[in-house]
Image (cartoon, rainbow, N blue to C red):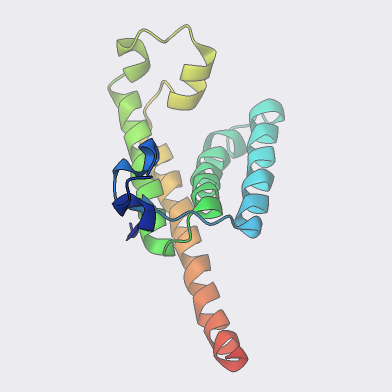
Length: 156
């Protein structure tokens, strides 16, 4: 992650947020935001109305990492591959918590929200779906960079 030194950090007029002299730059991206909303709606649709043996168990896991990636890219203009890897590691962490039954260890098994967000059943297939979803993200982002580079050079 790239941090920048903020000019207020070296002044006495700095508020509590400026106690650290480094800030992470945030930049809103409308396209990633629209993709985030679209993927969220698809995930809600799958979770609510799809009760099959392929789309619900595998499609949702495939799409959720793409959703998380788009969500992060909505606010942070960072390189695609590191963001994708961080999202994938986060998904692995959540899935790993299911292996160790974190919801039960925390006493949250009665909380529907905790069970939905953290999950309750570990699956290697889920790990594969996360990996394939992030692989698609990286492939799309690299393809986008290859085809956008000539356009950006001709504009400058």
